[in-house]
Image (cartoon, rainbow, N blue to C red; front, top):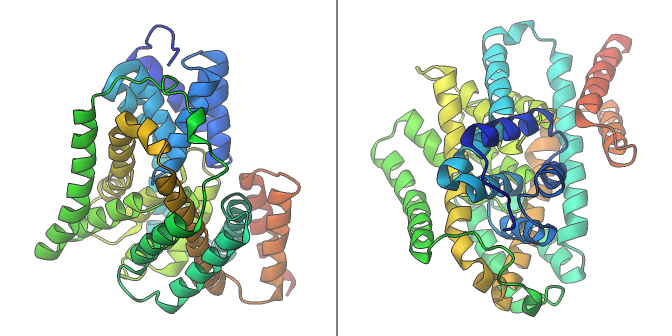
Length: 404
């Protein structure tokens, strides 16, 4: 990386805290904010290095924008810099969502039902937009469109089978490696010196080893010692480990973990997802809302923070573990093809989630369909910010309730 003199931990934290307060618009917008701040303004790295960093983080499970931020912080102050960058970027939305979850839990009866219903309709529109956008990018040809549709159908048919989504992702990876060709990416064009972040291969093995150890150990511990906190940590870690394709894809995984287990009801889940859309910062902070919303003998701040840490730890371990091996990974054509299959599969999972549980629990009549289409049109074609669309849909939902 072509960075200037290293920044202090306080400077890294405050810079990312500012971005965490203003970065509305989802992961793609976050990457735009990062480019402006760290490439154009601060010159921490070159355009080429930034593009390669984004490619690495999109290649891995987890929230790409947060992982980019972690590596940017690491490039300045090693591991403490990565933690400072993540903390600053995540703190604003996480605190707001825990506060909202606490208010909803304690004063939910004072909130108009139309407000919750409007947020649920917003969630439908947001996921429609995500499926539409991701399908255009990740399923641009008939083989991947077919894989997307097959995965969506299988998810709906086998939704009650434990581990079905993980199995489908493995099958999508195998199908991609055998069926797809990564001809759009020419590994020979990769400059091995572009993303030169110092880290030994041994440290990479340690991080990846800890990642897989926790992925196997946490469910075992939750089974042997069935405590709510341990089960919740295991569920969030598992969700954070298996999400390819961005924050929206975590929705069906978290719905399986939190709603199917009856830790909280569907209405609270979808309302929280709707609220998360209007927050700045990473979508994975939705876990903080969920953790703070469950009924437990512990403080909402304890459960919210633990859920937040559990869902982000896999992202940190994976991106730090992959850094030393990135160039060789990028040059492996079959591995690229496998991840192309996985990406098509995650669009299928999100498509299935759009129908069940999102739309099936939020849409009740033609008026609701009209509001969803209006919200989708406003975000997709009028480019209105999500927070403004949220206000519009909630107001219209309340007005329609009074009119009919």
